[in-house]
Length: 339
Image 1 (cartoon, rainbow, N blue to C red):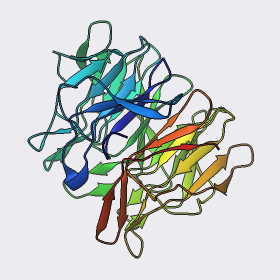
Image 2 (cartoon, one colour):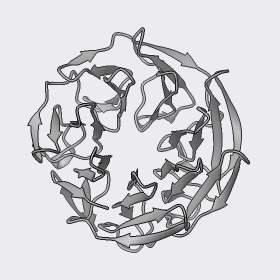
Image 3 (cartoon, one colour):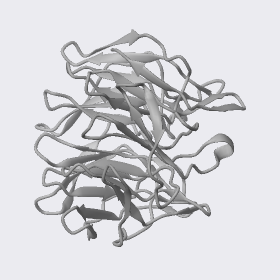
Image 4 (tube, one colour):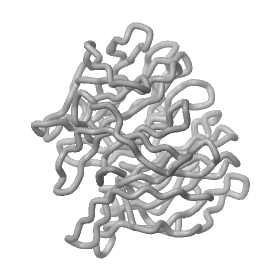
């Protein structure tokens, strides 16, 4: 990449390029730039200048081909209510603002093209129950129902029936992690209880499988005091969580990418057990056999990176942090994985 960065976003555009936006760089300095990675040449080029530097924001590809970039940690060390759109040529500032500032929130594209913005963190103040809906037709944010639990670092995934499953996350103050799940119904704008995961998790991943189940992997549990190797499978028809196979490595802040053949690639992550360290290992979940199998390790151990499935079925890994004890490395690498 043009600069090292972590806590950024990476989004596949309609033309096959990848928009890499914002994040933090060497010395945890803000990156007020974006770049465009071209998988056909393997090179990055500078994108037009965004309106704000952001980290721990969201970037959501919309049905009209634009990308919604919302909220995040911004200069001067505060949390933002603002958003902008990237249309392939320029960043367009959105006059409408979210109901509350938020970072480490989730953004989920709904079947009708709107985006559900859920929860998040107001830096050093509180976790949020507040949610917004962004309408790309009007370019406006409208508050919707509040979640039943405040949370940040949670996961929000659109299910096969169009509802959104919210799982886990962290509550602040207190730093408690959640096992509670809830479902957002776009038709009514309500949040309904969806039971309890088998383990409390934050900074985990969720992936919708082709058979309609949801794979939940890893994360951090305050109750256990460590990162998790455990996984779970959620069945939307029965509204039940069932144990999945253990990963080879406990990890949080990793990535999970659904591959064209239905398998899921798990890459990198952070493990604080014993000596705090970032992991380079990758493994693949096979939904037909409900098993994990190791695959080649990354060239560099990494977490807080991003993974994007490219049109040819390979996976682009960009940026991230590498930690070993007190040592930190800020990565500007891109890696292409052929699963």
